[in-house]
Length: 574
Image 1 (cartoon, rainbow, N blue to C red):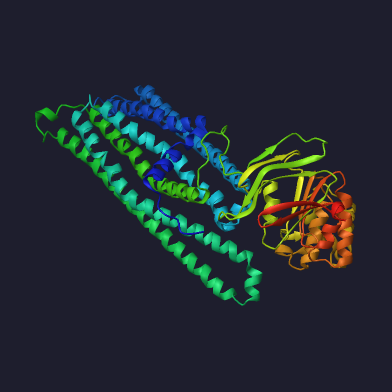
Image 2: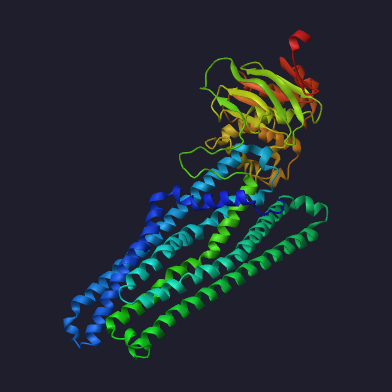
């Protein structure tokens, strides 16, 4: 994955709007997460007033504690209510964050699957995994902490200042002057934090991509004697990640120091003013306030700055989220819609699906054209169709585009023009490529990926049809033999036959095979092809092959030559 670039102004604006609109994916929970601190702030004003009033009666008026039970119970009740409100708000924010992240991961994964292997192969698997897991996880702090704290920081300090205004206009003025200094200086520091977080996300994505690719090619690197060099490469990328992480932490600690400094200065200013007023050092105009008035202002002073401190403390969460949004947009080119009901807009192929029928036609393409990702024509516009019981051999020179055509017909790649109509359910096709993917696990696990309910007898029968039973019996543990990644431990022809065995465990309407007999000798090839043709009875079959002997056994032939598709009938040629 290449180095990420800074977004343009229009892109940055769109990203901010998308990020600020994430709450719409879980509106009920997020509204309560935002509203609960505001309601708790209202109760805090009442709590401070009752507490100041009770202390004034106990200290200045010397009222015995036995007569103050009503006020103390009221204060305790308000404290309990605030605690419940704040807890419920935190819980709602956590629940909303998990719900939103789950929806985003589903949408990004659906976009990944819809775009198909032609797109996903262009990006390291590690970077795709980081995008869906880590970069979506980066929204957690923004949703749980920053968004509720920002709303509280906008309304609560102003509300507290207005409440204090009738009590002491000087204290209210101090609140209004000093409170905005915290977000002002945090914004200045936040510009640096945002840049550091973007670099951190880039380095993390790059390290994940490098590590995943090296693990994937570990066997090849070991054969070439490049293991130690790649270890040094991963170590260098890891050290770079450590440096960027420490830079982000330094900025975070600096922001914490700044917000604590200004909050402390604001509270100290209010305390000094009230103390000098009580001592009569500010003149007669600033004296005469009761103890209740002074205590009320002092109790509210820290709370005026507390929402701002919470917002500033979580400001780096916003920077992290913005960097994640930028990374996701650069990877996927577009961000998913912020409505659960809206479909995900992607560059998906033009494929139309119709109800499955028993009619002969299974697939029909009109004005169908195929191009490489860089725009080179592989197939000029043409019409073609696949029918039940009419197998077709797709032939052409190496690199002509046979594999691309197979993947495009079933929607794994976007077609350049035209429409493809499928007359079967979307899961009723099988495509086996030239290099079947084999995950780490036993042969039985590999076969059960096609049919989880397959019994041992069914698996041996499928292996017999694929001419794979003999070599599986010779393996140390038979069906329980564990294969390495990408089928390490068996030959290419054996891997192909295991993949064909999975075919015989399915019930598809359309079968597409890419060079299924490329690694087989003549006798085994004929046996495997005969089994495939028997299995394909009542189904549509398309085989891409270079082997003239294979094509001769199929009734129809498509020849791809010079971006044109020519249709022949073997019976007519004979």
